[in-house]
Image 1: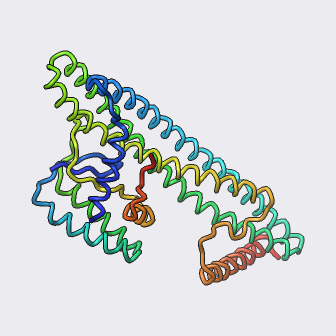
Image 2 (image 1 turned 90 degrees about the vertical axis):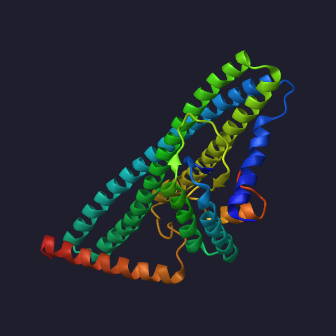
Length: 232
Length: 92
């Protein structure tokens, strides 16, 4: 069985749960419509949530940039005072912060995409909900019970599929933002403690060593240019 | 036939595309089995691009059931594995 078949089964199972079993088919219409409105609210909340997360990361990035400025001037002062050891330490920290900023930039970019996607989802769902509402009233007013049954099944099935899809999109976006919140809180804590090493994680030993070498050479060249600038 | 790309909406495509989609789907199954992330990713991207390039988007206000449902483009290999193991992607 392929991925497409499986995906279809997963969505169908979710759809059946959404429709539920109601005695009067006409009630199914109202029940589904209520659920659609709830879902639409959830999407709106999802968009707001992603926007908030993005703002939080942008604030954090701002803080890191400020810290970098501070470390820059500290390194300069240290060189002036012939304290190469201190200057090196400041530059090392700066290097750590810079890689944090890169990772924040990636996360912000990711959230941007999520935000756009959810906004498109909201637009799509709200068009469908509106068209369902019109259909619902027409079915109730114009069709006999037997005819209505067929119409109801058609439109409820169609909208339930959309709802299953949207439900999943929100769920995944929420998981992502939860994840980022945790990372972001951890970063805040590390920033306060002044220890930022190894936070990026996921690297293997070789990558770590290579990163260290490139960081060291960056630091050394920056130190050299600082020395030239202050005439030491 | 109607194809849904999850998270993106539905497209109307010719039924003649089915064989091509099935072929890609089979390769995806194979790559998920081998846990090959990059191959899985490129085939899923190809699957979605095939539908988009050969289909016409269905109007937002139209309510219609799909014949085929394609997972979201950013689905991870782990999520795909979960689907195959029957754990499902969507919580109840």
